[in-house]
Image 1 (tube, one colour):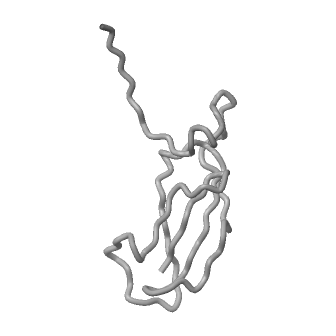
Image 2 (cartoon, rainbow, N blue to C red):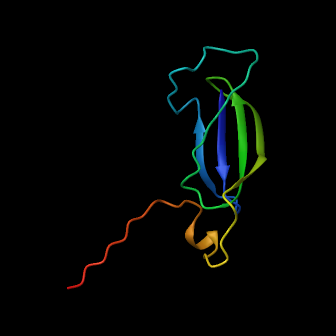
Amino acid sequence: MLGLVLYDPLGAPVFGTNGRFDSQTNLPESMTGGTIEVRIHTACLRPDTYYISLWLGDHHQDHVHLDKVLRIEVGVGVAAWQPPRSEIGSVFLPTKWSYCQE
């Protein structure tokens, strides 16, 4: 059972998933070896450096925890004109603006 948490550059958790609480239809009963592939769509993340912590365990408990063991780059970098992530956060949700004059 794999769990992971994605952290922004400030160390705040942005996203987490774990086979124990996120339903998975193809979860095997048990494995003694193999590969686990996880795909995360990053379209809603602002360009920056992110870190991933991993947990490996079974259906009842964690056996291994690797804190911020992976570093990933999303996008092409932070735009100089944008406020710092500490003020606007790391998630960018598509937004539609409309204006109405009275």
